[in-house]
Image (cartoon, rainbow, N blue to C red; front, side, top):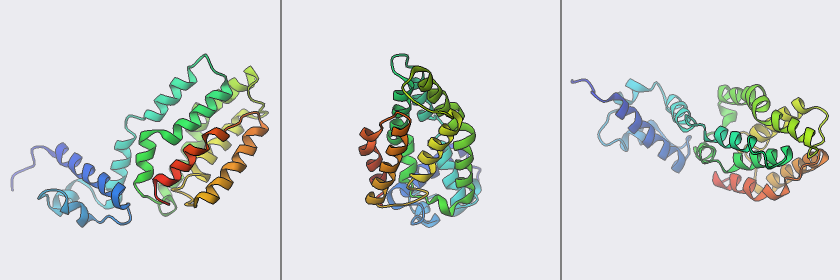
Length: 215
């Protein structure tokens, strides 16, 4: 058998098909055979030459989705805006997270992070060790300085915001119906109002996030 001269094209084809099927049918409802059936003649051996399992394919799909990291770019743009307060920056960053195209694609994959402990653990650690100090903490500190926020502990507040946004209201971690999501959001609004930030106007974005994955 001749060698595949274009392995990168094969990998991209597998990922393109897999991503589409994961979004259309959900990760759990997509089998390796479903993927093979859509590959136009490629065999199971071709898949297993590049990927060891369906989970391995999912990991590669997610890695490719976030390769450009558009949300971080959006956050940096918001952070650098000198015409708005720190409090407004925080609200816009939360809104951006709910509408970012890559985040939406990730949610539509139909993964359930409670069944993927390593991915869930990575998300928790990234929320505290990366997102909180590099994204949320600087704008909270800015909000304290400009008077738009009243926060005694910016570092801890940033970690709490990050964990709430990425874990507690993440429908891939805790699937809930819209009523429960509304109750969670109203509770969050109470928390943010206590330090001077009203985020109630971004509720429709949160509601859309939940409906996007057909809960």
